[in-house]
Image (cartoon, rainbow, N blue to C red; front, side):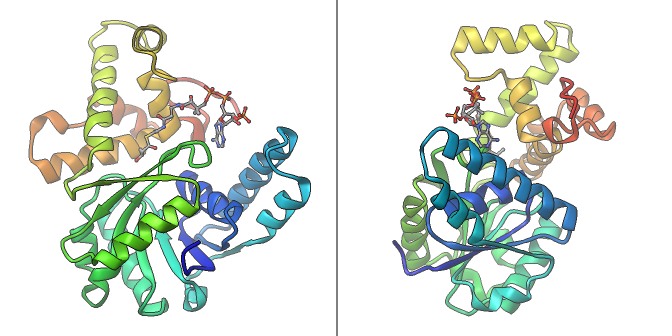
Length: 286
Ligand code: 3HC
């Protein structure tokens, strides 16, 4: 294990709650921070459900599950960051918000603590510019959804990220049972540069009337051996997240082809955000 005992995760949405659970299951104490009590309560419910499933499947014992859940403490502010050894930011994919959070993270955390971001697409160098005193400790640590299941952590160095920060990030990812793979600091990195245009194109195919969502997903699932079709995957990721990633790539790579499909934008504007809101391309009930 790396020289880390306690990890703070900022943001208790889909990704943050997944990262918190994986860290706790790997033996780390976790401080999960979110401004919303409701979001923290939802994260705790998710942790209990996934842990119970692991016990049921005999992957862990009841005692191990109880111990992992007990290692996660929640809080609505960042004051507790003064005694953590690592921070992973997993807030909404908006540059200004993330920069503000980074400033707060840097002001509370010790000056040897790595400030990692789970951003899906935003430049690490740009985020690090918000904390010039900590630039060498800022790094991309990009997990995949669902975090307890997906093995990859995409590791992205910014312009000033030190070799020590990179080596420690690789070690921490491995200690959490993940496989870290490096990518360079371009908008969308590798994963979303390749995935999001595919998802966006599936929305265009639907909008143009090439086929309905079930057929588009069926064709891509059966024809390309995808575990789920691109439209269902978009619901799973969050349609707002998909739109935001396209916008970040459009701004960062300056090409028309990264504009989000109007059908995707319409659904987000209508509050249909995917699984998390109960409706997206598909209906999910509760
Ligand atoms: N959290 C934890 N575990 C979950 C889960 C979740 N949200 N969803 C499913 N699982 C677990 C299930 O409990 C089940 O575990 P089991 O071994 O105990 O039965 C296992 O995953 C398989 O689930 P299911 O049998 O219900 O369904 P599937 O076999 O269809 O698998 C899936 C579900 C793993 C989500 C699979 O469909 C898949 O791999 N889909 C693609 C996911 C993907 O591409 N993710 C990347 C998105 S891009 C991203 O995250 C980057 C970001 O920047 C946008």
